[in-house]
Image (cartoon, rainbow, N blue to C red; front, side):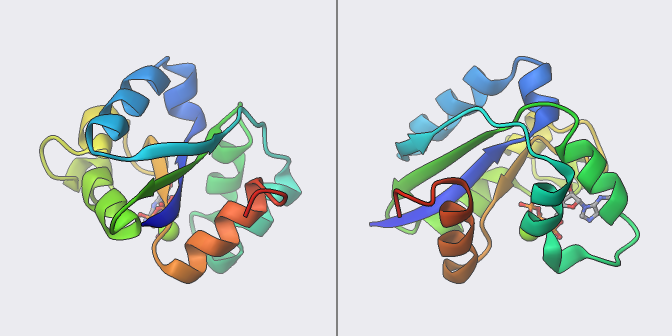
Length: 135
Ligand code: ATP
Ligand code: MG
């Protein structure tokens, strides 16, 4: 079993797609281990996405991620990290495969519905970032 971090991003929360995304994820065999509603500060969003500092979309990404509450969730499954990335789909919702979460719920560009950890190192860091006492 492996753990990974899903974030239901502010666009999905404000569009009231959270329940549909959680239903989708549970149907893919993931178990929810931790979950909360959280509004990121600009500093927190900057730290979470530090790897993208200096890229053209960084300021826009921080503004988006602080625009309202998001829902970070620790999920568990076999091959959780890889499988979550597969069902999330490509970064750009316009390019995400049919039936993926970003295809179904992403609005476009930065507003792409969800985040998923991209490696075991990222999953460890990102789960600890939101749930420091639980991992
Ligand atoms: P995430 O890390 O959120 O799961 P990802 O791993 O698919 O997404 P990254 O390259 O890590 O993509 O980019 C982080 C986030 O920055 C993306 O989810 C998206 O919101 C935004 N982003 C990335 N590339 C672009 C781009 N070219 N134009 C606009 N926004 C972008
Ligand atoms: Mg990423």
